[in-house]
Length: 165
Image 1 (cartoon, rainbow, N blue to C red):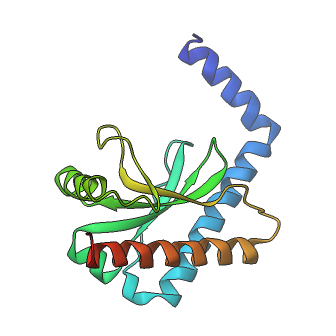
Image 2 (cartoon, one colour):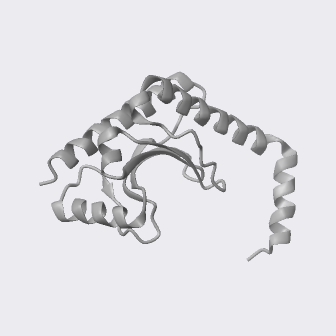
Image 3 (tube, one colour):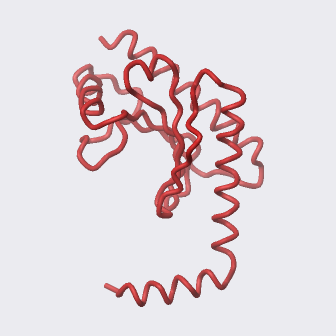
């Protein structure tokens, strides 16, 4: 396994090529504009002002639709860097709530979306791929796909919470 020194030398080489910083900056700008778009369009969803930029593993921001917020749940719109895709996750405000709802969904047999295998080592409860291969050449269409997919995911989560049986 390479040492931190070797990683840092390669990191500098990649940065000096100029592509990595431009791609990362463009991605962050897009995700911030997506968050801003959703904040303006859906003020009732109490979209967080903060963006978690991650460690080039994932970048996300959270939404708190009223019904989910009452249940101490939230929705995350996530970009997974290595996979190069957007997902939406049902997540909780803490591990206790996460375990409670993970167990409820597991025990109900509901399988509309992928339930994570365990709460240990996961930040999410349920995950759904929104856009497997995003086209960053058409940001308007990408925003539409993410928005529509997220809204459908929220509706499905709310429907389940209203009738978990």
